Image 1: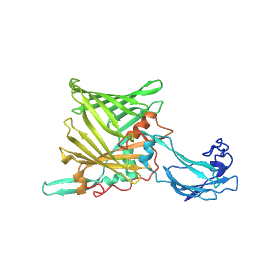
Image 2 (image 1 turned 30 degrees about the vertical axis):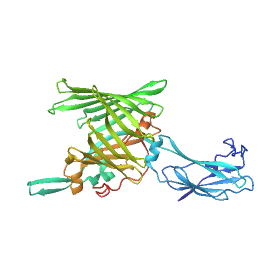
Image 3 (image 1 turned 60 degrees about the horizontal axis):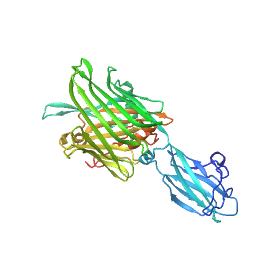
Length: 433
C-alpha cells in the first residue's frame, strides 16, 4: 500500500525553515517548495509519497532508490518523490539510543538549485511493568520399561500461544514488580514467591554531579528459606558502577559480596572490581575482573558478526573457558535463542528461548536441556518468566543507555517494536544441533 501525504498536514516549506544555500552560497529560498520535511511511521513499511515544486521552469534530476540509513528515496523529474522504509531492524534502532530515526536526501533542479528532503519517525519506548512465571503444560505421559518409570512430557510450544500465556500468568502468584524514579530510571525490582514473601530485592540509586549521573549503585538482596520454616537474608551484593556520561556506558565497577547462614553468621565474603572495554561500534567487547589480592583476568568476551553478538565466552581465572554462548536471531534481528555450553559439565548444556507476544506486549523467556530438545521430549519441568511492558512517553537516560548495551532482550526499557509475534520455535537444524 502507498501512502500519499497531505501537503497541508506534512509540509514544512522552505520559507518556514529559513531557506538554504547551494554550494556557491546562492540563496535558494522559495525556489523549491513542497514536502520537504515529513514524519512517517517507523513501524509501517508502506511507501510514503511527496511532491516538490520548483518555482521556475526547472525540473528535478531523477534519482532512483537512493539508499539512506533507514530506507530508500526516489524522485522523478516532475518532483514526485517516494520513500520506502526498510523493514524494522530492532538491533539497528536500539543502537541509536534516540527518540527518532531520520534520513536526509539532497535533490537538485535542472538549474543547479539544491534542497534537502528530510524524512523522520518517532521511536516509541516501553518500560518493564511486571513479570510472572508459568510452567509448560504436560502434553503426554510416557513409560520407560528400562527404568519402570513414567515421565511427563512438557509442551513448550504452548508458550507460543498468547491465550495460554495470558491465562497462566493471570493465575500465577509468583511475580516481580518494578519501580521508577522521577527521571524514569529504574529504582527497584522486587521478586515475590507464592506466599507473597520477598525472595529478591534489587535497589538502584544514581549519584549526580553537576546534574549528570556519574555513579550508579546497585544493591541486591537474595533471601532463602530454612526447612520451609522461615526466610533469611542469604546473599547481599553491592555494586558501585562508575558511569561514563560522555559515552553513556559503564566504565568500571566494584563488587562486595556477602553470604550468611540461617543464623546470621558469615559464610563467605569477597571483594572484586570490574573494568569494561568496548569495540569501535561502542558495544561491549571485554569484561576484566580483579579479586582482592589477585591479578586481573579476562572474565567475559564478546564477539560480533554484522553488528550482532553471536558468541560470548565466560572464563575462569586460570584462562580456561567456563561457558560458551551462541546466539541466534529472527528476521527482525530480535534475539530468538542462545545455546549455553557448559565446558566441564556438558550434560547441563541448555537452550534459552525468547518468544515475543506483541498482542500481550510481553516477552517469554525459558530454558530447556539441549539433549531433551534434540530428542523432542522435554521431561524436565520448564518454568518460564513472562515479562510485561507498558507504554511510556520515554525511558530514563541511564535505562535507555543500558538497553543499548544489553546483550539480552530483557531490559527494563525497550523499543516498542510493533513487530509480528513469534510464531515458531527454531528447529534443531537452525540452531546447528
